[in-house]
Amino acid sequence: MKGVIYTETVVYAPPEQFAADAPYQLAIVTLEDGKRLTARVLGERVAIGDAVEMAETRNHIPFFQKK
Amino acid sequence: MRDVAIIGIGKTAFGAFADRDLRSLAVEAGRACLANANVSPSKVEAFYLGNFAGPSFVGQNHLAPYIAGAMGIEHVPCTRFEAACASSGSAFFHAVSSVASGMNDLVLVSGVEKMTSQTTPKVTEILAGAGDMMGEGRAGATFPALFAMIARRHMHQYGTTREQLAAVAVKNHANGAKNPQAHMRKVITMEQALNGKPIADPLTVYDCSLVSDGAAAVLICPLERAHEYTSKPIVVKGIAQTSDHVALDEKDDITTFRAVKEAAQKAYKMAGVTAADIQFAELHDCFTIAEIVATEDLGFVEKGSGGAYVLEGKTCLHGERPINTSGGLKAKGHPVGATGVGQLCDLVLQLRGEAGERQVARHELGLAQNLGGSGATAVVTILGVA
Image 1 (tube, rainbow over the protein chains, first blue to last red):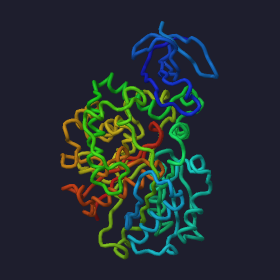
Image 2: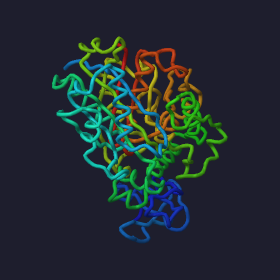
Image 3: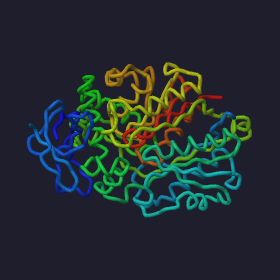
Image 4: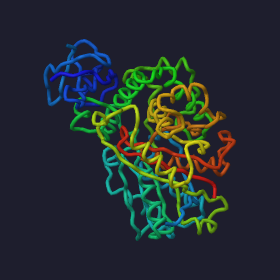
């Protein structure tokens, strides 16, 4: 799955169940078919307009990374 | 349809009250409201309660009769409304409908939340439940994160700046400092607001509303009977509730709240006014970006210029259109279920000319905008002097 970053943030104050992950980057990705998906970002930080691709899924959470 | 009037208001202070439970807060606000209109509890024909997450925050369900009974309101319909942070705005919308229709005459509408008995991570988790827990929530989206993503996109599309976001916080704290019932009565500087602890980029702690305990209540009746209870009835000129997708990623354009735009247009039409006629407003500044977006969606300014509008001082206490003279959710506090009715109490104070140090010069027509989640519920209410 490929797409482009529509918007993003870095979360410093996580909900209880994600305390161990913080800080983590969260993004809304516009996929090639035009649909949007909320995902985590793996590796290098991304910005609006960056091309990304799905790297893996963990516990039903899609992880995208910079292409 | 009958015209509806607000004849009484009552509010607790908003804050962190370790020694207060949910019911005692709601009872205090309800009793103050009934006393304000000199009405005994036995006269109340229905009780509408807004509460977001009492069951999660304090483990109590069946809240409406639980609270009503403690106030001496019995044998009448008592119902809880849940619409995230618009819970009591929604309760008010439905209560107004019942009085307008002729079903009821005297209806008490209340909102309450008791949040501070939980840790911040737990509160964050409970609040996240107002989003889509099968999508954004599962990925780790908090409410600050959702509004941070709205802010990022707004900055990208319209050139909105960090300084413009911070200007909302500085203004609302300045107002809150003058409000004896505000959670945080502290003036902050632009420098402080720009250098707060990061919560979700680009939002810092100063961009986020407060986790608060509190309750608020209003009593309504048909306008034709309002003179029996008060010499200063406040009329519900226009009101609308609308909805949109719960998940942020299902919205076409996240820099606008479609539900707010639609509710505003309906409310303006019902009131027979335009955005330009609104003299002052209480807007849902759960995050600084939310107030900026609201000023645009309500038609106070053109899309994309909400940031400049606040930074130029147009919305400060003595500006051309004062916004959040109460201090807003930012400084007054945000006990989520109480917020919608709390906003109405603050409008009524201004309209009656009872806002003290915060009193605005022109106070015949005011607007409240209450938002649920990241825009899935919106309630817009326009109140005016009779």
